[in-house]
Length: 209
Image (cartoon, rainbow, N blue to C red):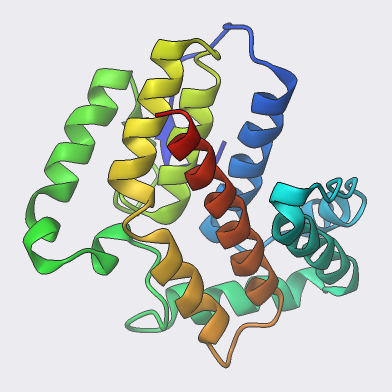
């Protein structure tokens, strides 16, 4: 888990496919929180490919591209790319905060509402975290947490509500901004995979209505 959020230990049984989803959320959260070290790049490079089924061809291709990019990427260069794009010396080129991508009328109360919901889940921001709770990585961490609550109807509904409220309004614009940046190389692949994965999530939650 990154330094954004601290959560209680969870012991609920999780289906293998949901465990895989949680792992993808964890990878995405880690990559957008900070540049990858050599160990993480090696882990991604050595990961299994996703079977390209009819409904997830784009996801399988995006993951395959990310695996190849991780195998070819130098850790220091990846970290420098992350800092240049998402941190910067003043204003970041691409902001990782969800509220930036919301309509003006939605921005004012998003952090207040999000903090209240996180508190109700038993989550809190890590003491050393300087980022706000609507950081893209933190939102993905919350989804990972919710998946680990279990695979029952109530748990899935909690996932769906949070996903629709906080990730759906921002993820496409955020990923498109990363992809369009002239300063992204490795992170262009990260963004394309992230968008493909979250599009599959969106379709899955639509089916679960």
